[in-house]
View (cartoon, rainbow, N blue to C red):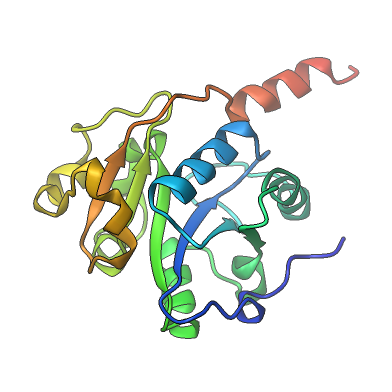
Length: 203
């Protein structure tokens, strides 16, 4: 199966705003696309890069990488979206390390991390989560199961929160900086899709 091009080949222009959207994408679905499109518009990004996780240390099973990569590529249909396999190429697992690698390669671009609100509850379990908060602005997009105001991340970085109407400037801000963006909810989930596929599989 053909993998996505290396991020080095994209060579973003000086000052371009790029959203980094990481996940297992097991499988990618319309909810993921909704988050990416919302960020693309509300943050006025030039690109959204989908970063397919090599593995998820917080999950016991994350599925075949090549299958998940193909799933993300089929869903990221916008010409302003790219799917990266940088974790697999560089042998990385943790978001903090991926951000370090991307920032080192593309110093002229402005990056913002995109995260669905359903990840807020366990974000403080990510390795070096506080360093992530200090290294890149973060846009949190409303998702079913995600509530604003209740997570350790939000308490730790309360003074760095930007109002949603300033989200257009988020990618240009110096970290720590984050915002919560409310949007119509898309209720598709990878878990529900996997369960449906398992129920329909022959016994």
